Length: 168
Image (cartoon, rainbow, N blue to C red; front, side, top):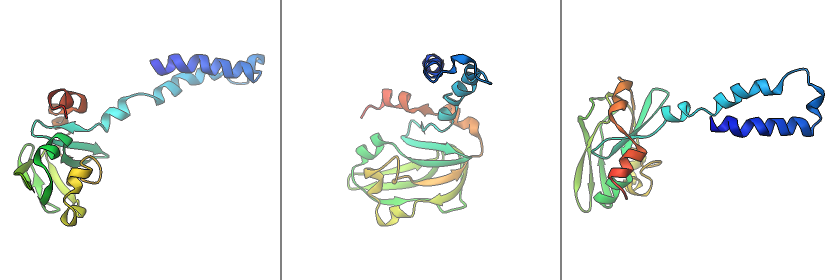
């Protein structure tokens, strides 16, 4: 791992500078495997944003998926003036329609990137639907939902693949 290649000489240099060449009671180099494991990308991958080909995204953390639309989608829509979203408790099905966004240019249906139950609707969008345009990946999220089947995430694109297709 690249992080181990960086840490090993760093730990050795620090130990030498502080006089650890006189053999400390523990072997500091034995800590490297656990330090390197801490830099694993597995935890980052688990919380990576995934995209549909219909421009919705989902970010799953602790079994809850936050759903929104991509930068490409909000840019294509133009200024969002209304968000028609589901109610808490509504059951959504993978790729099923769950709402709509209306803008000054067009209206667009929303499709669930995963199956699950709506836990929260972004109430801020009722008063300020333009958050979808100004902060589509943060404050402009649409809903939060439980995740019924994590394997559905495997059918979605990661951010890099999505951007290759839909550059903005």
